[in-house]
Structures are given as C-alpha cells and as structure tokens.
Image (cartoon, rainbow, N blue to C red; front, top):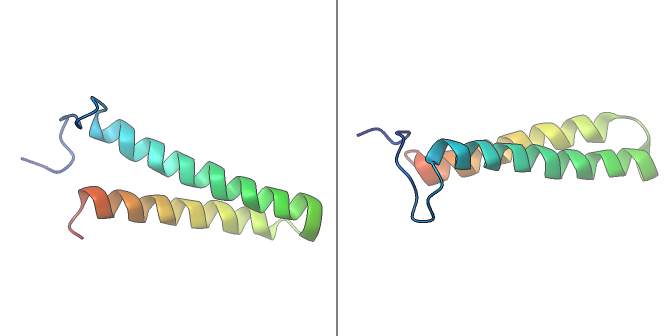
Amino acid sequence: MSKFDTSEDSDGTPDGSRVFSELLAGVLLYGGIGWLLDRFWLGSGWATMIGVLFGLLLGMFIAIKRYGVW
C-alpha cells in the first residue's frame, strides 16, 4: 500500500487534500508575511518572493515528514 493512497485520516480528511492544504497554507502564510514586509517596510518585492518560496519549502517539508520516509 502506497503512502499517498486514497485512504483517510482519523478525522475523515483524504491524505491528498491534507497535503494540498498544507502546501497552500504555507505559501499563503509566509507569502502574506513577505507581502506585508514589502508593503510597509522594505518596498523591494523580494520579501514576497522569498516568503512564497519559504512557505512552499516548509509545506513540502511538513508533508514529506508526515507522509514520507523521514
């Protein structure tokens, strides 16, 4: 049986939906923090991009840690 099958967690949420929501939440949270930094403090546009990338990497790390081999 694969780690990414269509089984459900104890709360009834399918694994694929949970992984997608973790990735999306990381991008939105850290991208939003980066956007706020750019808007009110830095103004360069780099913090938004770095925040989005950091959120994506963190979401991937959490998903791999929960469902992967680590």
